[in-house]
Length: 225
Image (cartoon, rainbow, N blue to C red):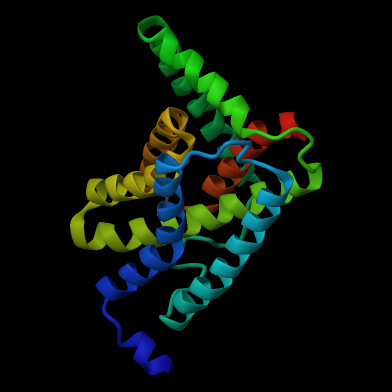
């Protein structure tokens, strides 16, 4: 079995990861466009289910990568450093500046759309989310997404198709499974995907990205806890 897994081509490996890890989330996002939710999307039960789903997927497909010879070092997920948190905060601040500029541009040019985004974001959030659940979800989700989107996807594609093709592919996948958030998903996912992808190509470390992602999730969810 182990020899059969290691004999798979890099293309098959990528198809397994994208299909197994992200396709269920992409399908759910597309289905939500056709059949929008009538109530809050982010509820306590939803967060718990997401934690369990991502933990299971991480175990299964992380095991698949390990069987294929991937190591934490190959995923650029070495021992955490104190400066990783500082770099994560720097990434969050950079995104805040970019988002602030984009938001001002959107408000000035399309105020109706800006208002609709705000209303839609509040409508998706249920009140009284569990504080502990929010913290756990943020940690799990940040590591889960960045390991597979940057460490694995960009790591494989850049060797075959170049830097920008790999970043664009990661942005497209990141955006596709955030489509259930509507215009807000585009507004957030694209800048995050571009900045994280370029940073990863330049510095090749995942911990700052995972921590920055976790901080972004905390900032979005804690006000509703």
